[in-house]
Image (cartoon, rainbow, N blue to C red; front, side):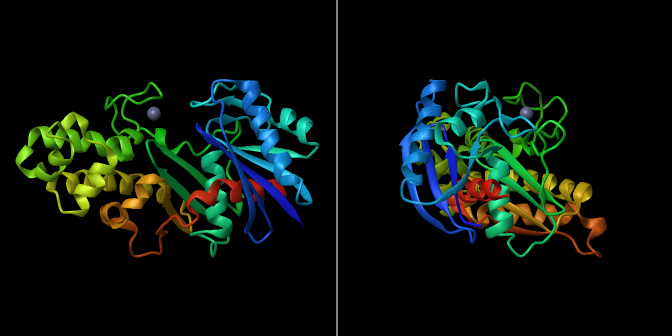
Length: 314
Ligand SMILES: [Zn+2]
């Protein structure tokens, strides 16, 4: 089969790419997202697709968007960073471009890209992706297929409850794993650690102008890389919680591979080392039998367009 277009819709930019059936990106085009205007956002997507389609023979379009997508992969039910509420995106873009369109959740799209062409390209059956950014997203592949669930909202891995009555989550519940194993949690752990033990957080506090409340994610990463005790401890806490979540995935699904992506993975071993340790400890009773290998994501910023384009091809 020929070429398809993948479109990655973020809060600030719409990035489209022409992708071939080996996962190679042949051309890209990007425009700013008019995030607060539903009709304009759809028109920008159409413009990006038309620009790319003008120079290539395109068969279909896949769109990845943060939010809840219905089970028919056509309507965005709710998007946290955009104005879409029950937006029939598939029909709108299909009408505007004359091409078949599928719409998919952005974390599912990224998971598909890692499964087909990235960190789990050797896996034939199953993979779980955790995306660790400001929040936690995820995607699950089972039996070689993306697990979408009966209502299109499966694999909301960030909102599995781990601490009943714990820290309040953006979803309204208390104690979701997102509040313990995300980039936001990393900053919260570092801020409270620096307040409790300023002597161990010398480097971190220096970066934050002496104000623990001004500590940001990049500061925690830089300070941890330089050996700051509180910053390293914040990564240990996040990694430990992530290991708990990953071990639960093994109990539930027994996948071939678990992939960790998202912005926080840029910290590399600072995150992966405590995550692996915690994961193996949690799996203690199963370690005499094979279990999923942990790997960092490989597709980077191309995951959105490559995954969406490949889903459109199917
Ligand atoms: Zn939640």
